[in-house]
Amino acid sequence: MPASPAPSPTNSPAGAAEPASPPSASASARVSHSSSNAERRHRPREGPTPPRERSMVTLTALVAHGHLEELAMHMRAARRNGLTVEEIGAVLSRVGVHCGVPAANSAFAVAQRVLSEGP
Image 1 (spheres, rainbow, N blue to C red):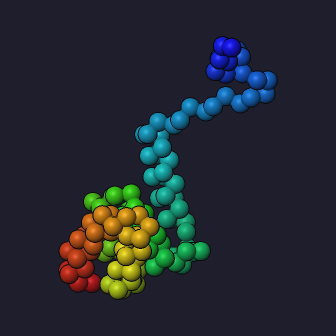
Image 2 (tube, rainbow, N blue to C red):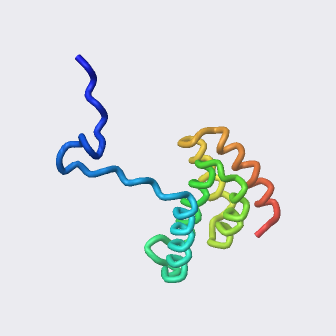
Image 3 (spheres, rainbow, N blue to C red):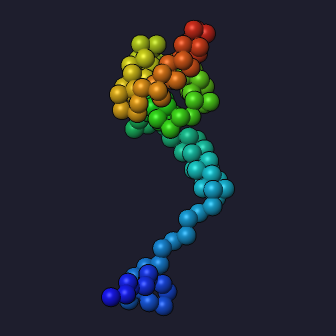
């Protein structure tokens, strides 16, 4: 028995939606950049997620996705937002549990360099 052809505009079931084409990387970057800038300008300083917690989430996301080149800047911001050295260490330890030890070890190396600079 021959396989059914893949749905196409001419043989797709009635009412089936056509898949949307993915946005270009540059369009995604523009939307992401402009919406995050707009959000920062209009978000109350203590908004629904206070700066300390936003910093914890940011550090976690950067380590989880391997964006170590931005980690130092965000660790400094985390310190300005009130995170202690111990709290940053706890975040990185937790990242190691959930995202892998190599990611956490790399983050600890950045932390050691940044946090030795002082507040």
